[in-house]
Image (tube, rainbow, N blue to C red; front, side):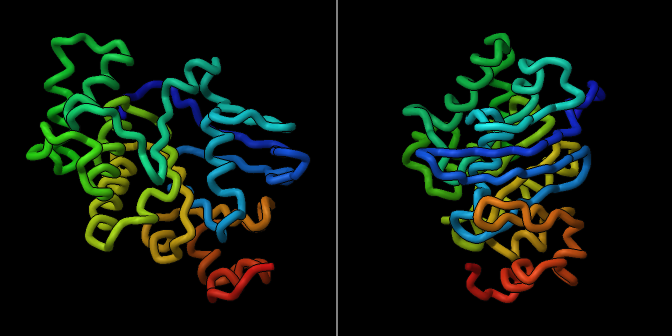
Length: 242
């Protein structure tokens, strides 16, 4: 990462989201800073993906505030973040062209696009698949391509929504290795998962949601060794949450 001014911290205050008269997120308060890998944990329907989409700007809160304190402007905040979904959308073109298209949108000169796309594919271990139609790649290959496509934009913050939920162990390891590499290079990781093993491997801090409420926000070691709430203890031991 370059030494530009950070768009962080990300401050979420009294965040509420409602749809069709139902409150899906209740008064969430968070402050996320540089460096820590933040993992959002919780059962299905807890609001993990919803929180990511709100923070990334894909949805508008019903009430409350989402502020990138270091960004200065909303446009700058948007430009320096990226998001990878559980099922990434692949364009109807080759793996290489998926990345060069992203560079074109970002205003990168045509003369630079091929070299930068080659570097992104090499980083993701996909150089041999550069000419393969992206939509014919395996799930794990598509996810690595989506990560490479995000990496090429040089995001300061990378949102990841259940990035390995449908992948086998080998593909999961490959994706986690990429994520760890991004973190080491200075990218802020904010990731949603329901996989406790993955959270133990990757998290520095845990945001634990249940039924749209922020139940715990603590260092990962503290959460896994001594959760503060009955809900946290139940989730870690695999009990059903009501």
